[in-house]
Image 1 (cartoon, rainbow, N blue to C red):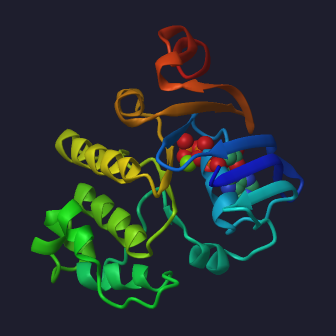
Image 2 (cartoon, helix red, strand yellow):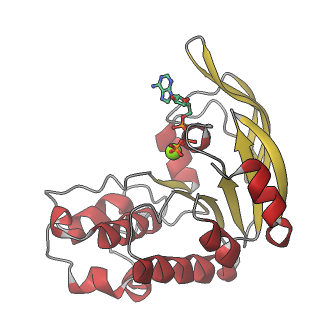
Image 3 (cartoon, rainbow, N blue to C red):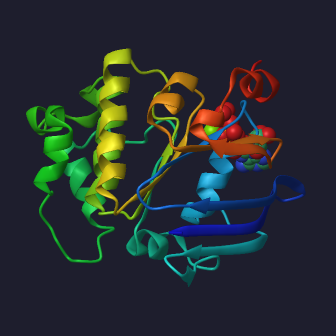
Length: 232
Ligand SMILES: Nc1ncnc2c1ncn2[C@@H]1O[C@H](COP(=O)(O)OP(=O)(O)OP(=O)(O)O)[C@@H](O)[C@H]1O
Ligand SMILES: [Mg+2]
């Protein structure tokens, strides 16, 4: 396993948000985290990135105990988060946004890897445009490109399809599949869009009120499971 989380707890002050979360994430796979609004999906990704400090539990990344490491050290080790809402820099160009992603690299490479432009040709076409002038879908592609510029072994994506048009959703799915099929990256996908999960995911975990309540391989994500845990 690239990432192994055991019995993780997290609280905002007195308010406990994550309870006893145990999760294994494998190289070459897209591991999906699902659940209704407010159940703790983003909180879990932030615990993995280290921007929120876990209260208890173990977290091993590539065999190293990372639970006490600050976010920049986790980034250097190869963990990268594409945040919910994208958070690109609107007043910087596409190229400058991608350069910021390079800072997480541990190999000292200072050139944007051509692969990023191969995966997302639109970022090459628009490299001199301001991030803020891109469409929502293009900004999402930029956010993913920026994360990839850091050469991550673990890519965390927080609802990448949220508010994005279907044609770009498809392109993003195809890129995720390509990345996972390379075999040297693990992807954790937080996603509420069921068809996207079914098409591009390998396994799923459903959260409810900070706990994992159901897990399986994607083919086990049946209508009954969806009805019980995900329907509103
Ligand atoms: N800064 C904070 N202080 C206290 N509680 C918070 C804080 N941020 C989030 N929460 C609470 O933590 C819980 C989990 O939030 P989180 O953002 O992880 O949910 P989510 O599953 O990502 O939801 P969504 O699908 O809407 O993105 C929610 O009940 C939320 O209100
Ligand atoms: Mg969220």
